[in-house]
Image (cartoon, rainbow, N blue to C red; front, side, top):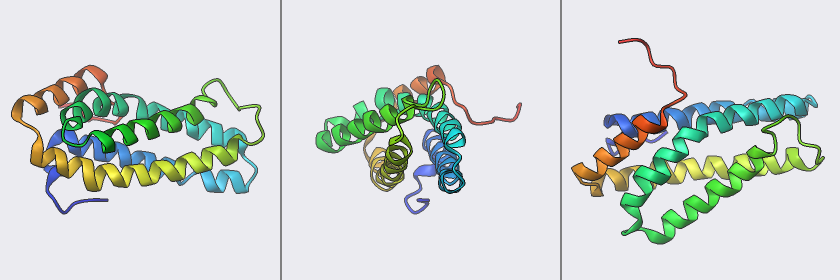
Length: 157
């Protein structure tokens, strides 16, 4: 993914990027599962994606996005709306396999949207944050991350 602007040198952005990478890795399991008729496996992957996106979305929506919304209100509103659409499809699998036979197709559509969404964040939001956020705003983002936690593995220090 993106490495050209230097934003990944910030731990906060690096962690968000690592979460994006994990989500993309998980998405790659969906097409083979669907081809093999593994809708149960698709639901399992959907739950794994939702688990990664939970704290990730909190950091974006309560830390990063508010700091950028004043300068980029339409873009931030569109990203938040995409979060809601993606979350809604993932939530259908929260308690097991969704009963709706159209769910696998909706999941694949939502995951295509999510891949595009990730590119928007990495190519637009993260560089904009690097260029525009003050030290105090970064501290809010970092405090939000500390509160939200992460699903990424962190070796013991």
